[in-house]
Length: 280
Image (cartoon, rainbow, N blue to C red; front, side, top):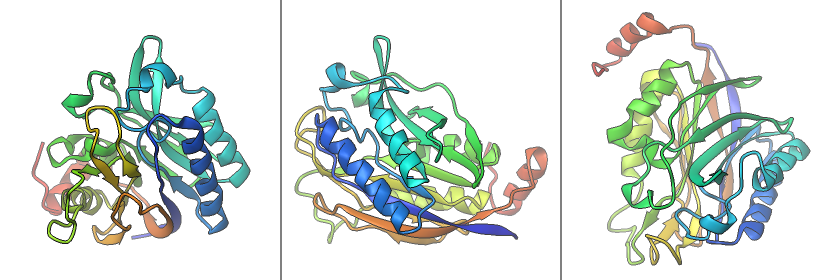
């Protein structure tokens, strides 16, 4: 096996519902801080501009490209890094829970619209209809969002792996009831299980970054986003889980290995079977 080590910034930031200016300002700061610590890629949360399912999206959502995305693109240029980030996208009269991968040149090299959205969110968001990977100077990168990696929707991650993704990035918003006790019920097992399966089968690191902070409006008003962001390496081992808590805003830089991928098509299917996968 040959590969290269990549430093990835996990920007577990506070997201305040309905406050795009402060959220974007916070994201830009984290992008610059991660670059100063040697990151080549920075991963930010889902719907970081407005907050997941916050009803302000009907008024404040912007197109992609557009002013919210442009703020992140300018930061990517200034810092010289790739940025993966979740934004609420306006497309005519429709809204999407979207994510972008922005190059150090400020180019949107990949855009994903969430497919496995929670049913309670369809009052706001439409369903995405495509998957893709991006060829970049650091490797082939896949992008999806949060529940796209539920164990019952791993077909989406499998598709990105079969497209040759060497790294899967997943902006997320992980929420629990306000009285959740992490000591009695530690958060993150479902994500670690899904990430581990994809990483092990495709030798593809998977990194999901959640926001923190209370949810004060929308279908999950009263819940709290708690971070606990996760990075799993190409060998399926947990690299890092960030702190848990609605005030656990933190930036950490982790190292993962991107493996050179030569197998594809039916040859990859045979390799997956040898690794224990016998699914569709």
